[in-house]
Length: 515
Image (cartoon, rainbow, N blue to C red; front, side, top):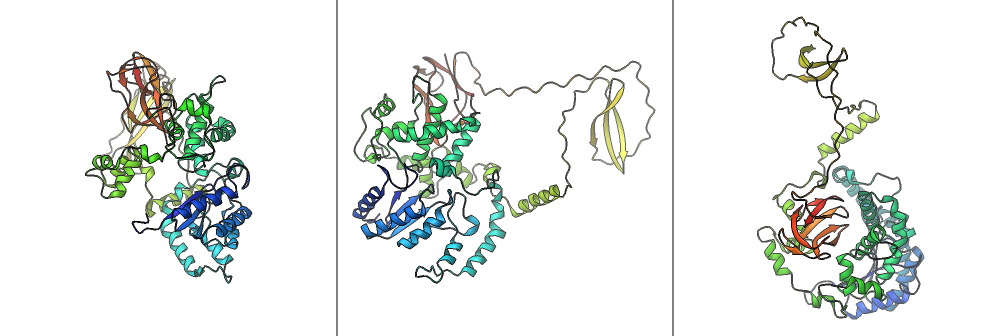
């Protein structure tokens, strides 16, 4: 970074094991040591990265004051609003001498974003830390954002609760994004009632994995493994299903953890691990194969710059989909797009009509199957012509359907209708809706491998006709942003594969059959 003439900002992830700053791991001494390490590496600035919004105001004052005393580079505080404390903590950090704080314009502020800049500008007005921002110009910018930009995205806001803070962060030290992802996955697996079990298990898993900070990607590693433990562990066995990322962590590919990883968990995770069963102590990148040239080759003709190549290198499946959307190779799903202002106005108009009682809900009633007594009539209403089917059920006429006829026709005189010679047979009862069957390969003879959770197929490691041993990895399923190696349910030959790379699957779908 320095050789390229760029700014080197060293970041320290702010995390806790106690309700407040302190304890045996994440205390003042820990953060000061990290800051000194970064200074010795040549950092131009040092950032306290509070991704979960955990830093409390007085802890922010104490920490910033200690860092300002210990190191020379400017101190930067990055804190999300998720818990509701970040604006308070930033003000105390300013009092302690912090050099940089991260904020956002008011329309983008709060929730899981940052604190708004405008209140801090006014709070510091006329002090020795006056920001110099013109609040009137900020107000004009906000007006443009509110009228021309934000309406296109307001349908993406979480409107399931009134509160704009998440106190679960204070209770469980769980970042908002991590929490919402866990809840969504539990819902998809019909196990949302296990959320309290997840909260109880999470600190145990985190401790087993070396008290790693709950920040992407390690927050997901801890979170997904926690869900795995809650859903699949038995009384006799913990860590029954271990994700590939936990195995990588135990091997050392994510670096050195704050405290040692639980030896029993590490040994179990590395049993049969492809890179070796002994964890490394060297720099993680030293054992990785170069991947950039492979990524360039895979995105040839699609990637326009190095940023596109890196997107693919980081996310080979979802990244490739995104690039195809980006350059018009595939149409993106509607729920990934911003709305147009015309769509926003139309939606707002519907809401206004609904509130005024001008909309009537159309009852959803399935029509019965017509009998052989169905008769057709021409009906004329205010100059419009309808073809109507009438089915006599138990002697009582029943309007079965009404269809407007687009073409203009002459209005024929209605012919007299003769009564039926016999009473019509009652209409057949409507068929009960059939339960949707899971996707299954054409050849289902053998042992099926079922999806243990909803997710996306990353890749199959075996093809139809290949031999496989029970327990050998058959495919990789991405779920909750983590890759999960799914083992073959039996030894034998792969008879069928139910999906392809990139396909989304539901819990219980048949992914493969071994016979």
